[in-house]
Image 1 (cartoon, rainbow, N blue to C red):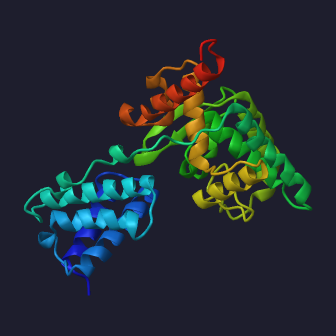
Image 2 (tube, helix red, strand yellow; image 1 turned 30 degrees about the vertical axis):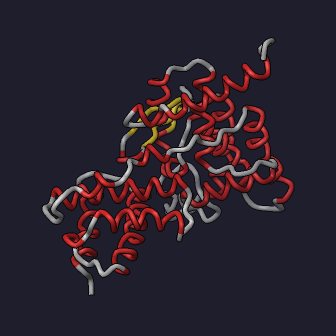
Image 3 (cartoon, helix red, strand yellow; image 1 turned 180 degrees about the horizontal axis):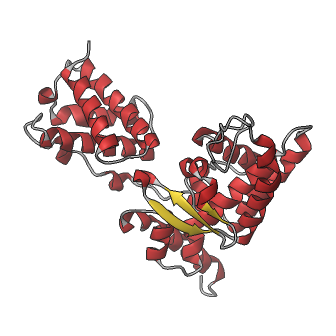
Length: 308
């Protein structure tokens, strides 16, 4: 049987979906994070929101690191979910106070993102060509993968955004693409010439081979071997596979997005423009890249200044 706390989590997730319009991937992550919280609260005998104490939440956050062994960025996401849930409980009169005030804000846990150099990015995208040697027959999926890698780096796309791109979102003549990001917000971003070239090559040949007559593609650009829209997990696999082939470690889809933003800042693009290209609602989220850029400048100074 469900407890009042279980019901509260279900109502909260419905509120995020219906009233806040959060993306399905975000809802899934928040739901999973709150299930961890429910497990720890249940172990303490807490089954009703009114029974939650600040000490329960603080113990849970500590256990995420010490017992479950989660990294700082993952813990920060858990804290964000807990803080939103706590505020919602208080607003609904289910708790006597806003328990979120007792938890540090996630931004205090934020780490600098990993960034690839331009030469490393070149190795990564060119590693897709090696897939042609291993493939004996069928559609040249490595062409699709090269187009994905080029586009993610050229336009700063999230893995979840890649699979949602529809044919109508592309304007290859103007080399631009309409992206639907978090919270169903749309933005228009440009793409570089290499990305446009590989995307056109994929559309003209490989995608046509992947199409099925039953319309399972749903008008999406990037398709799987079975002709269905490419899932977020598949994009992760593509990036990790070619990163290994390129001899690069600890590379994931967001690494390409981090590299896109950092290289733009290094090239002189202002922070507000980078914010718009990334689709960040708050410029404070984008400001982390100024720290990455600063580290790059320190390295340049240390290696090039005559009085280093």
